[in-house]
Amino acid sequence: GAVVSQHPSWVICKSGTSVKIECRSLDFQATTMFWYRQFPKQSLMLMATSNEGSKATYEQGVEKDKFLINHASLTLSTLTVTSAHPEDSSFYICSASLRGNEKLFFGSGTQLSVL
Amino acid sequence: QKEVEQNSGPLSVPEGAIASLNCTYSDRGSQSFFWYRQYSGKSPELIMFIYSNGDKEDGRFTAQLNKASQYVSLLIRDSQPSDSATYLCAGRGKFNKFYFGSGTKLNVKP
Image 1 (tube, rainbow over the protein chains, first blue to last red):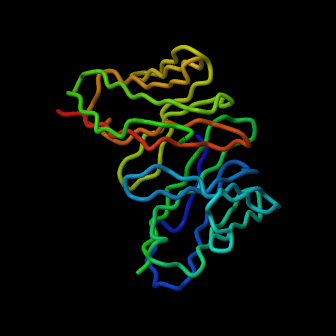
Image 2: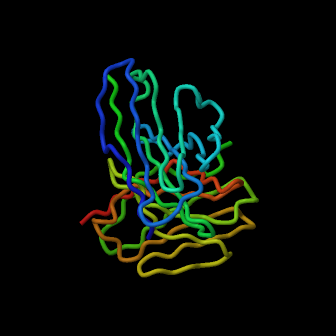
């Protein structure tokens, strides 16, 4: 299957700082990447759809100014959590699908803990 | 109403038994459905996908889809303790978006 690399795996930061998470498709070009958030014992909640070369599409209730998404190339999308607060602590997972392929492949996830 | 619904479990089965996981969906426009396995603290990994009515078998796993009833299931034969995980059902909807159920936790007892 296709490989999606996500970094960092975990990050601990102070309240008020910004955190950037990178998601790379290693062996394919991903025109679309998706960002999910998962709280403990809950399912994945879609935050936004990231399209290469255009603005991300955010799901209802997700603050676009707080969760900045940049999809600068066909292999890289970044999620920046700006001015992070403890309630932003969560497991963030990126995913990508190949053009013409039904499947969705996930990165390894980033566990964010905001103190 | 959630797009995809699952029983959260936990579902406990003895080793060697058949585990049956179920999922319903609300969007009739969804054409493809997926089962992912997620271990604690890890990201989901794809187990199976199905888009045609009926059964699809892959090794110990069988996915079943009934579009008339909007129902998807996953059967795991000869369950092993290593199958213990949370199983997520997902539907692929408009704009290529995947919507996930809340997951069913499976415990396979040795």
